[in-house]
Image 1 (cartoon, rainbow, N blue to C red):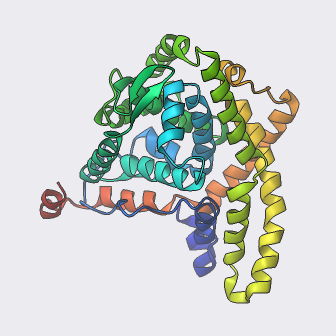
Image 2: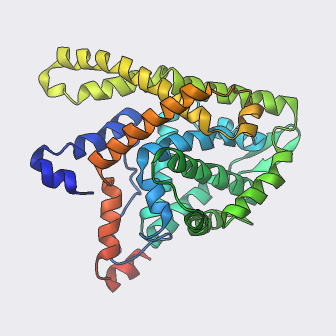
Length: 346
């Protein structure tokens, strides 16, 4: 983890590598994220949990999160509520940043901090309500919360299993779902799956309720196409802001240099996005791709692009090491408990 720092010294590439995703995706830490206190507190999942491994591989988890987002659009109520009550369409990067912050905090923070974050989200859900195709809904509906929990965390797991090069075993997958189940339950979910077998049963039971009306299916497909456009073409806010942020890394060299580097950064980002898109589409469940009207990628090209992504992610993982919040959380867990700070935080 810290090997690159020891080898490279003050010229270690690790700080730059960790800044690039933050700059491109605008997914920096949020004000309520905290990983250092209370000392000795293990958190909801704990440092030996497979969830730490899955979320610690940020590139694979991020791509898997997009898969989870696309599968999530198949639930008409969740799709309508997301478009109606969030800024996903207007500012997708900000929405992604908030989701990433919630996932980081609930996975790696001490339990009092994670519970405070969950309570904040629960309060945000209270006023979110509406009607879809004559059906009333509320964001605090336990079934909706369970759906979001399964699709989002399942997406992270899929990305890790497919692209990390170090997939979890069957027992570790069961432990993964068991460790994160309390997060879904604290949000209000009921019958939250706790094993891989539970997940299989959940999908078998829920699929009949998804996009059952033509209007629902049309809306889900339109949203999936929009997500594909954002990821695949890398136009809009990602291309514009991402390339500019890369250029701003060299702002001290002057505006002309910043502008040139930003312009040079856009084609590689576009090229990488198309490779990532192929890998992403290949991770979609066959039934979900069919429901969303998404053609399966060419098998040969998909394997080649997936292998390319695996190699790049492996190199990134080895060069960058663990993210800063993971290192901070690990130091907290390994520190002697401080009773005063623990009582204050609680």
